[in-house]
Image (cartoon, rainbow over all chains, first blue to last red; front, side, top):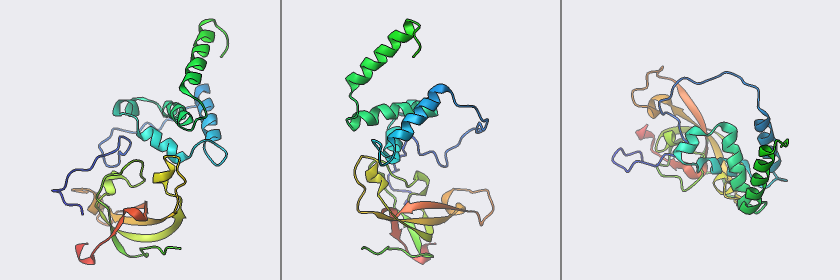
Amino acid sequence: MADPNETELTRGVHDLGGLPAGPIDLEERPLTGFERRVDAMMMLMIGPDGAFTADALRRAIEEYNHHDYTHLKYYEKWVRALRVLLVEQGVLNEQQIDAKMADIRRRIAEGIEV
Amino acid sequence: MIEPRFTAGQRIRIAYRDASGHCRTPYYLRGKPGMIESLIGRFHDPEQLAYHRPGLPKHYLYRVRFEQSALWQDYGGPGDDQVSADIFEQWLEETDDAEQ
């Protein structure tokens, strides 16, 4: 029952329906190279031959704290979720990801194409 | 196979409760009265799929119609404005017609 005396429910960070909001930016922009890569990885990981479901992707994003949820851009949310979900599913571990990130940072610093 | 609990045209209320994790029932509909528009089908449970579980048994999913004036305090739009949402059976509760 929707009794106003009942305890208020917890609203998920993503669950914005009905909250006041400013104007929506409807301008179309071409995808960046980063965004295309993240999109491609996600499409490969979701589905019967992938590592997790779209439902798991949504859940991973819904678990961000308020600051991250409101500040991260769309594909930044995706790439962080990819990391979380691939580790959860045992496809990669944190050490492998950290080692690869260090390798990429080194190559960028040395001016080598990533 | 378990039969669907609700039929088109039936008055219902969305459960007034917190989600225990991922769920597809938006906050603004919790505890609100509506009417079953149609039965969409039976689907793997997204509340389980979200945690890498198989999502079985499948759950019935309904399209539920709401009066906007029942959702928002001081709704300023036309009185017959409605909104429909896809809601899984575990979020639907029977209600009395008299409440509407």
